[in-house]
Length: 240
Ligand SMILES: C[S@@+](CC[C@H](N)C(=O)[O-])C[C@H]1O[C@@H](n2cnc3c(N)ncnc32)[C@H](O)[C@@H]1O
Image 1 (cartoon, helix red, strand yellow):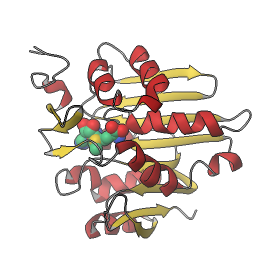
Image 2 (cartoon, rainbow, N blue to C red; image 1 turned 120 degrees about the vertical axis):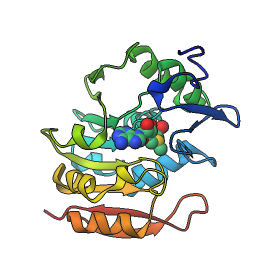
Image 3 (cartoon, rainbow, N blue to C red; image 1 turned 45 degrees about the vertical axis):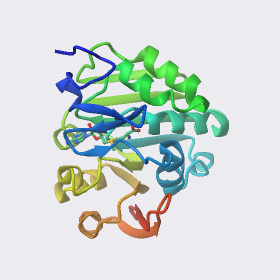
Image 4 (cartoon, rainbow, N blue to C red; image 1 turned 90 degrees about the vertical axis):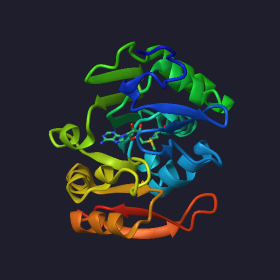
């Protein structure tokens, strides 16, 4: 297997990916692209960072934890790191924790992220530190102020025992209709239980059943205008 690591088609460990429009990864298992065809980096900025009130909140809270469902190519991580590097508060520390069932290889991550020259310093460092064989869990300290923690496995059993909370969640598990498990009521309840008081989430979906799952978990949910022509997206917060 793994005939062509860069291609990924013969690598079932990554869930099966194809490359569309050059270097856009597409999951054959879920029938969906990893990020917006318009511009994944702009989508990350609009949906996940601005949707969670970032980077402004970093000025009020110097030790900040972001958690994500679906690490994929690490695009969200690299764009977050880029913004952190220009806006980080003195003595600030950012921890980015991500849950991923089908980790890509370093080659695949590099191929996808090469599309954004503005991320080059960050994506090259990510690839250089990326394990050859992704273990069950890895922590990479890129510097004193930023660390990545990757939990490999199905999100629900990985998140349930996680003994910590996040200040902001990036919910990025493919379209809900194509991957309902990543948006189930049980998983959304775990997300809520692992959110600090006053913490938040953001996601590109505004599917009614997903919003209801988030509300019944305990979040105060709001619809916002979506990115790049999408009508709506969702954001929310945990009051206490
Ligand atoms: C839309 S992509 C994430 C894109 C990513 N945030 C990025 O920056 O490239 C969704 C990700 O969720 C992962 N995934 C799908 N089902 C999962 C599950 N049950 N548990 C954990 N990860 C899952 C997929 O392997 C894929 O990497």
